[in-house]
Length: 312
Ligand SMILES: [Zn+2]
Image (cartoon, rainbow, N blue to C red; front, side):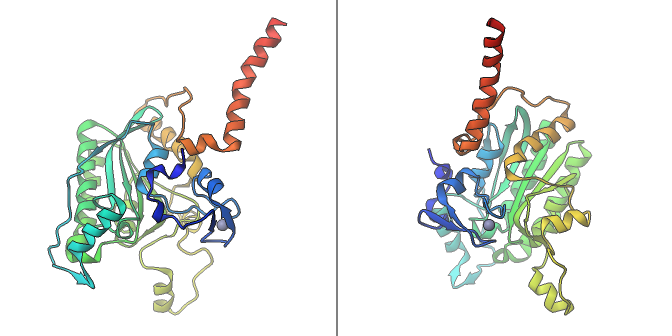
């Protein structure tokens, strides 16, 4: 089965080949998908739809989604060519998602946690009332159930269609995270490309541990806006994960393929539980890569060889 089974095909550029957004290399689609949408030439991590992120992070079949019935209200009757209410309906039809955040509970290598993932496909992953409410509810649920929290962000910032209501979500999510902290539960923020605006300036930056994928754009205002405002040339790599790690704004950069293991390790520290040692199958695409298949075959072969040697 193809890796795209969770995503909408039209969210991907068509054809057998894909051009890397970062280095311009032509990537063979099948290999690109097997590499979890990471460029084989430059290591650029493409944006992942929320459902694919969940499939890659949570143990198979462990994700139980919560608060699926929350819907945004068009309180301002906002209209930018298409009325906001209409835009919501169209985006829902196009993406199959009701808003830009998917929340629920899951296990990661056998360790239970609360999991929230932003969806860039839904109006640029913008944070409005539903995103804020889902994060607040998830924090409360995590505190009640004594679960650590993992949040993946991927966002253009606050949702302009909701005006001040969307900006209020910044304070609301930070307050909810503070209460979770007071309840003694760990929170982990994983910032992926791009994490900007009101999301960076609120919940994504105030969790206990701040992780990021390589090369992710993370910032409040965009680099062009800052450069024009301060009338100075910006340093190389400005607002990218590596730059922010060097400046102390991030705790760690984690490759996409290693993220699940890293999260399990951190959750194990926080909860005192051991990650499940037994081999758990990763999503189909990972199994399908020649490299992984070879590695698995090699590890499976080794004990057999030993047994043979013993018998001989
Ligand atoms: Zn590339």
